[in-house]
Image (cartoon, rainbow, N blue to C red; front, side, top):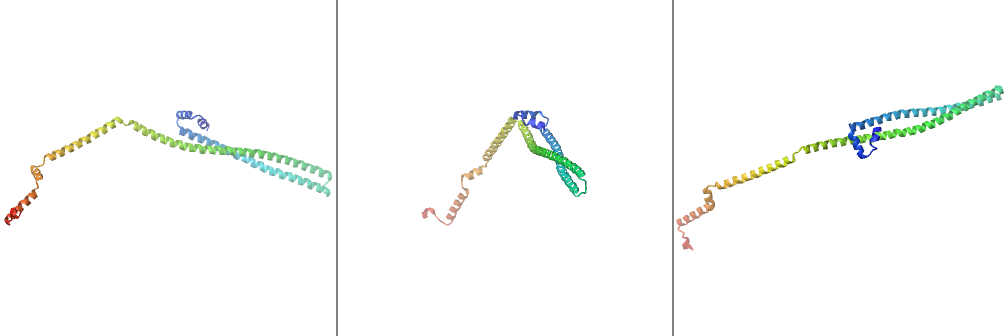
Length: 238
């Protein structure tokens, strides 16, 4: 607990330096929380003891109050009995006086118990405040511990990623991409070359057929033969 108080009171730069020099910040924080829980247990035990003394003082107040009333009643009864002749006046005065002395002793004890109870009650209030503070600190540091654990995980993941990125050969990657680009260009040129070769190997018949419309020529020739058979002369009809 003292470690945590000292650690988080110094400046941010000193905090980072201190954390760098401890073996494990998470373990140190966990130990601090365990220390606070130990303090809490001790405070609760002490609080219970003081509350018990306050309760005892309260019981004594009632007890001595009852005794004071009892002795006062006894003194009155003795005097009444003397008035009726049941006891000698001198003896009655002696006994009544003794009863009143006991009454005053009981009243004094009652006042002492009241003072003790007031003191114990003040201690209880103070100790309850301390217990509440310790509980709040425990909750606070447990939340801090959760955040710290998350930050450590993120830092470890980031560190691992950065290490992997640092190991990547940038020049090698660029060189690989350039080789792939060259390979694609070579394949494209090769495909175009094959296309040229395919065009140059066409047959002469295909070239001839592409130069004339064979079907139309044959149809014209057949038409002329048909007209000759029928004796149709295109020059006469025109």
